[in-house]
Structure formats: C-alpha cells, structure tokens
Length: 525
Image 1 (cartoon, rainbow, N blue to C red):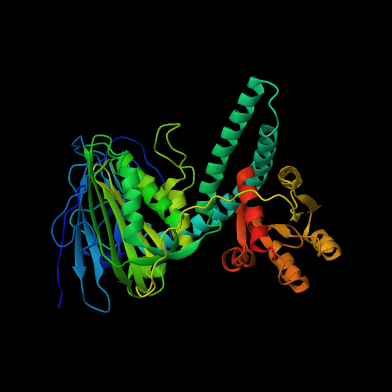
Image 2 (cartoon, rainbow, N blue to C red):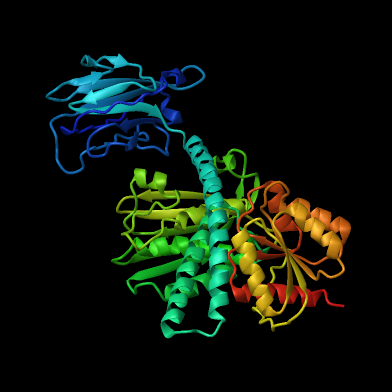
C-alpha cells in the first residue's frame, strides 16, 4: 500500500552570488519524517534553514506550505519542490519532483539542469540552484545540535574559568592594597579621590569576573533547599520596578516546587533572563513566567541532557523583537551581545547556562523574529517533604583583635596584600608560597596558629591535598578556603562538600576581617 502526500515549496532568489559548503552524503537519502531540510547558502537569508519534511513539528506537515527566501520582493526566479512519500518497507522514503517555474537562469540539481516532471531521490549534500541562489539539502537533528552546543560551552567554560581565576588574583591584590591605603590618614583630598576611583574600577572588574565564573561553573555555591515560588516572587518584586508600564507581566507558578540550589545564583538566573526579555520590548509587550513540575523520560529530546526524573520547569517568554537563527546559535556565547556598546557585557545568558548546568539542569532557547523569545530552564526537583530553609539575614561581625593566621597562597601579590591587611587588624601573620612550605610552617608552629587561610588552586600540591595533610596533623585546626575558581573535581568537592568557610576572591578588607574574626571566635575555647 502506497501513500502519497505532497506540499509545494516556493523558493525565490535574488542576484546575490552563490556560496559553497561541504556535506557528507554518506548519511543516506533524506527521510522526511526525520528532519529533512534546505539550508540557504546565498541570498538575503543565507544561513537560514527550511524544513521540508512531513513531521508535525516541521513546516509543511500534510498541507501545502510555502517558504519564501526574499520576504519583500517577488521574483520570477523560483522553482517548486513537490515531495512524494512512500511508507512501503521499514521506513518511509521520499522522492522529490523539481519543477522549473520560470527561473531566468534555470534550476539545477548538482550542476545539472532539471528535467520537467522527473522524480529524483535526494541525499544529504545535494545542492539545488535557483537563479543565483544555492540551497543545500541537509538533515536536521536538534538533539545533536544541542549536544554540540553543550560541548562548545564546556570548552568555553574551562577557558573562561581559567581567565577569571587569574584576574581574581590580580584584582584581589589590587583591592587589598587600595583598602590598606584608604585606612591611612589621607595626605590630600585628591589622593583620597584617586583611591576611591581605583576601588570602584576594581569592584567593577570583580563583578565581571563573578559573571565569568557563573558561566564557567567554577564558583563556589551555598546549596540549600529552595522554595521556587518564594525566589521568583522576590526576584520579580525587584525587577518590576525597572519595567516600563507598557510591559505587562503574567505568571503562573505551581505550589510546592522545591529545588536544591544556591539562592543568589538562582535569583541571578531569573534576573538575567527577565532583563533580556524586558530589553527586547522597548515599546511594550507581555512577559510571561511559569513554573511547573515535569517528568523527563528516556524518549524525550531533553533526555539527552538530563537523567530521567522529576524537574522544575521554569519558562520565561516575551513578545519582543525575537532573534534570527544565527543569533540564537550564538546567544549563550560569552561576550556576545546584540545590545549597543556599553549597554551589555554579553555574559547574561552565558552566566545562565553555566549556573543552570552546574545545578544539574538544562537550558533551551526558542526565538522567532518579530514574534518573541522563550527561555526554558529545567532544574532537578527536590522531594517536597524536604522543607526549604528561610533566607537568613546577614549578621554584622564585630572586630576581634589578636591571633595567629597562616596564609598559604602561591600568588605573591595576594599573599602580601592579605598579610598587610591582617596585620592592620591586629593579627600576627605567617606566610607560605606553596603547600609544602605551608605544611612545614604549620608543623613547626601548630600550637600558635589559630587559623589557616588556604588557597584552593596551587601548583604541585593543591589545596585539597594540603587540607587532608592538615587534618592528619590536627583534625581540629580551623581552616578557611580562599578561591576564585575550582576547576578540578577534587578541588570542587573540597569547596562544596567539606563544610569549610569559603572566602571568595577577590575579597575586600571587610570581607577578610569578617571571615577571619568570625572563624577564630567560633573555635575559641
């Protein structure tokens, strides 16, 4: 039994020249139910893809459909592509009838002029030329594309994390010395202003490196059970003050949704996505936000990125300007932005991708020009029987002078600025420039040392190994970790699971004083 379905595809072109590309035809003939498509290699929409299959998710379906490459001018150079599908055998197969409908320069398939009313079988890599525009037949596999994107983002994340780590050490040394000078009696008003400007610039650099770390998935996290509704409502209260009155917000949040997450990072994810949605609607529009429980199974496309199980699905949509396919493809790249110079860092969605991935989740992006954009975020759902902890108000730590601190850090500028600040606070300071020297100093003066400040990332002997050796020497020794980035599995486990206090680089004088005095007080007899 043979079934015949057809649809028409009108392909208009303009005199914009041709382009070439390579494709592997060994993947076999196109099968329209598994993602056949045309990719434009020239013309005003070069790089765009057009589905030619019959799946309900693709253009065409089972009714005639049109694809117009030139959406304004009507050209006499066009051809009609009619697909005939047979379901005989194990899989549906397809043949295409290519009709020349008046192209001045003719319609060609792989360099040969088409013969009227002759069926041809097409393979991946075949090219059709209509006038001066070339179209490439290819196969569309959204799961494979997302896997490639995931691998690319992983590589970019490692690069970004390494850069952020180096910058954090530089900024930490700079900020520490600026804070030290600010604590001295100012010699002139002009000098005080210069120091204030230096501090402001340094803190701006800190903000950028923190965003890089969010993208790189290397920042330390305070992971706790979080009530999703509470975080969304709190974030939206902050954001709505910045929204134009012409933007309406519609939300639907299911009750009882809970995830294991870092509260501040989850808020940053929501803020970044919602700010992008707001900026895409300068003339007003609608922002929709929803949160619901969903189940990922093996047969789902998303299952390629997530384990089977229950997930909280966060979805933010806007009715703004939307993005073309080329922009969507680069949307998660760090430092890529469509905003005017000075209005965006290009790290918003990159940070979202990194944070969500670090929480065991996944991000999907759909967009259409002049229609809008939807960002969907999946986070592992937590058992509702586990009650989220309410947000804890910050506590001001009073100064406590006295004690001996051992600083172990391989970066001399960081080590020296930290030593200088600690001495100003009234502490005695011992310094080591690597793990082996730090252990030797600790063994020689263990009865005197009240606290160890330990860098996580060091050459030869990393922080996790140093910490284990310290524990062998004295299991009760207080330790505070210092880190800007922890790319290794062992180091990340040390940061996330050891239960130690973490001083995130770059830190200022107040943060250093609070961490050190609070920790020493906690371990005083």
